[in-house]
Length: 253
Image (cartoon, rainbow, N blue to C red; front, side, top):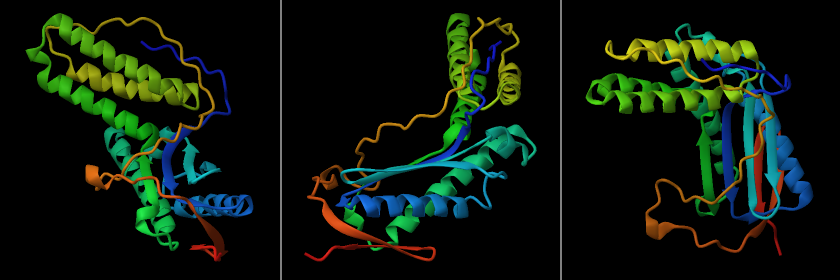
């Protein structure tokens, strides 16, 4: 059993996150304009997603144009709309992918050459972590009988440790308990008859406000090793917003 202890009522679950780095330079005022634009568009892009009114963390950083757009809310609320836990997790993962595609498509249609995109990343938030955890449970169910008791118990402990880390950053005690129950039911259903369900040590969950992940460069998945960007000199760009349309164009010398 994983003990849940809430320390911060202001935290929110991460429902989706989109990272980007574009090899162009913008002024401080243009960066602020882009940040405001992304905040507004993030709200537009989530109107049919996640089934709640989420909050957003939007940051556009200095240097090369790089930033992150995070959608924050309650993953339990999003999952519960679809009935079954597993189906809900799968659907919210797809919605997280949809959100990131909308953000990145908006940026890529703003007039920036494709080669200027040094890195983009779509993260699937808490639902993505749960999906990976459930996949590990399924693998344990499939291959568990091929393991020794010691190996099986080690794998089970690893799954519970990963679950504890997920619960650590959820927004409330009730939400953590609901997810804990669903995952432990999946684990219980996967146990071989020969191995009893173990009693796990008590672990403490402390909810904290999400912190920005360090942005590191990463080549596009579609690129070959020889296509890795060679860090071209950042070209100054002008940011313009007309209604719901973003335009970025090189500044004239």
